[in-house]
Amino acid sequence: MSEKKSVQPAPKTTSKKRTHAKGNPGRGGAQPGAGRPKKPIPYAEIEKISRLHPSDEEIAGFCGISRTTLEDWKKDPEYQACVERGRANGKLNLRRTQMAKAEQGDGTMLVWLGKNMLGQADKAEVKHSHVQIVVQRLADEEQG
Image 1 (cartoon, rainbow, N blue to C red):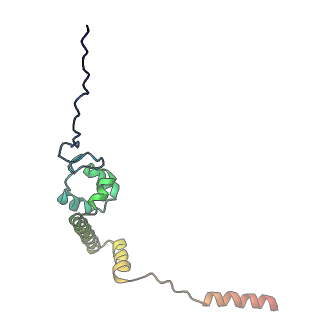
Image 2: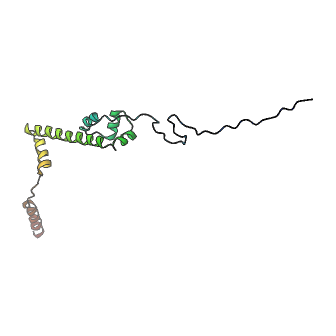
């Protein structure tokens, strides 16, 4: 006689929720702490180079970051303040240099500063006497 072996079903395992490294449920999407660490903003360097009024591409290249990262930095109020201070200092330095040139007697700089700072303008005075003479000659030729 042969013995019958009873077939028993495999034991049921209870399903556990899967968790990721930080204990977050595996729902996909961005996870806190995931990805590359954010590059800190070098505020002192940003203020220094902003004196030269660089473009966004130049700032990103100087800092070794992407344009996307720079766009994120531009949302930071401290970053914005550094750029504004740097640009203001750059304008002041330029004005100081221009004034020094003008004080040295640079005629071109004197004229440029006069126009831009003092509202001076080149005014050409038109004399009508030449026009009247030409008109008179034309009238004389028609009569004679």
